[in-house]
Length: 259
Image (tube, rainbow, N blue to C red; front, side, top):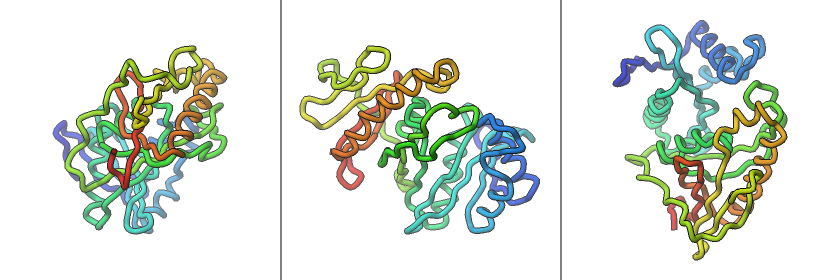
C-alpha cells in the first residue's frame, strides 16, 4: 500500500471482499441501490483477472475512493470509472498513472459529463488532460440518482502520462470576443476569438443540483452546450482548459499541440 502525504493509503484490490466494498462505494456515489450497482463486484473481479486494475484509497479503514483501469489498443489505458472523497481524486489518478506507466502505457483515456464543471477543471486544469472527442448520448438513458432524466453526453479526455505537469492554466475569456450563442439563462453561453483560434463555452454552476431541481432546464443546458461543442469539434477544436468560473477553452490542435 502506498501512503499519500495526508496519510491516506492507496492500493490495488484483488480480493473478493475488497472488490465488493468498492462496488458498494460506487453505488453510494451514483446513488443506486446496492442490489443494483453500476459496477458489480463480479465484473470488477473479471477485469482484474483480465489484467486491469482496481485502485482503492483508504482513510484508515474507511474506503474513501476507487478507480478502475483496463488496457486499450496500442497499450494505452482506459479508466472506466473513478470517484473519490474531496481532495483524494488527484492521488487516485496518480496511482492509476504509476500503474499504467509501469506496464508500458503512455496515455490514458476516460469520459466524463462535460456539464460538470468541477470535473472538467480537475481533468483539464489539474491533470492536464485534453478533451479529444464529444460523444452525444453516449450511454443512452441512465437510471442512477445522479444522471436520471438527462441525456448522457460525454467528453473523452486523453491524458499524456509522460508529461511532467499540468499546464499553468487556460487563457481567460477575452471581454471583446464576440458572443456566438446565448444560454438557457439568457446570458452569453459561448464566445469565439476574432482570429478564429479559440472558442469559449460556459456550463451551469452546478448541473447535478440543477438536474434534481429542474430536469427540463438541465436538459436545455445539455442541448445548448452540445451545439457549441459538436460544431467546434467538427472544425478541429479540442477542450484544453476550464476556468474557475465555469468557462471551457477550446483551441485548435495539431497532433495534440495547441496552435
